[in-house]
Image (cartoon, rainbow, N blue to C red; front, side, top):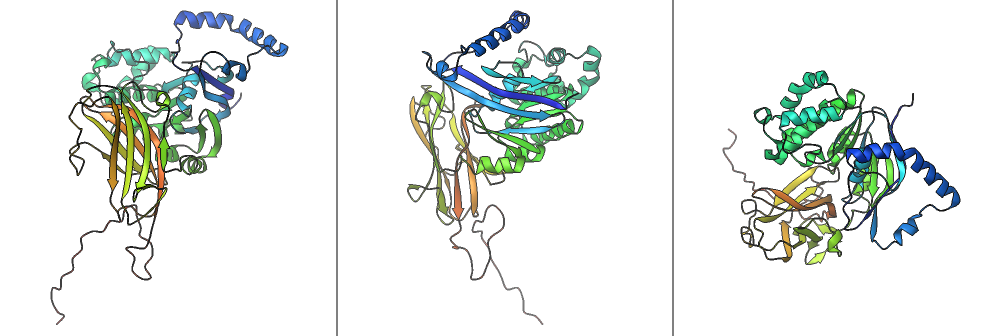
Length: 442
């Protein structure tokens, strides 16, 4: 028996811009299963005759298209925990949707050997009108589990998700945090042989994130296969011995996680400004789209900034929702290992300055938010920036760009005494020190 759990060969997925993909009904699946052998034979004959559609032919059609995945090939062995990393739009979620059989590839194929459990988005597979209890049984039945197996795991799932009081409440009334806790608990506890997890740590508090990491570690120790998509490089380093880097649909590199993460952090993302000139493809949606992110010091865009100079993170975004209120921007600063150094939102209670627009209706148009990092605060080193544009009441994230820009802090020696070495730690602010003489020795 082969020890391969997942094999992808030439996997490619093309989307037509502006066209919604039609997902299959049960009738479609049954019909497709019956006709697949004939379609494969016809495709093979067409390829042999040279009549198959080439990529250039598809591109020359009247529709504008993008390749979310382009000729991606790799193998994952049973019991391996593999990280999938890359920027927004790299093709990570598309890959997992193909492996979960939610969508089918344009070209190539993927072999899955084992029962698959997926957590691709908050509440994926949940029916909003059903209660938490009913959704647990529904998801488990879809995985092919018997009722006796579900009964045995039920209490453990509910306890992990911390939704005991709401287990008989329709999930449409759950918060996003409750959704993801229950969805993760179901996916991780129902013993799939292959677990596909997409950015589960993006929602939930620090305690829940830690519990998720611990559970995925337990899953891996039990010999099950895990594909873990995340922008949290620290979590990827902790969980995965091997990782795959995707960029604009292409597989850039794969190998030991630490080396792949370094390639990602110090590769294409190493730049002080990023601009999205085409609003239709910029991060965001119908309400907000990002326009630009840049690092500015002394009035100029800089990739290397002096340690004793102020640093500005400038975020430009387009608002398409006339009159929207309580918009705010959020900056996450990460060090070279992927650990979050600090986060700062532009909300009134978190900002030193009075925010001009918060709480007021925003007109449709272009906005610029600026976060100022004081001089002599960050230590020397390389830093990466996540940016978000959100609103609350309720809390909704409208646009995000992970590792949008980066910069390096250069130590000018402004705080060093003669002969002293570098400071340790991530921050090195000037703090208030006093020394008093208390008494003379007798």
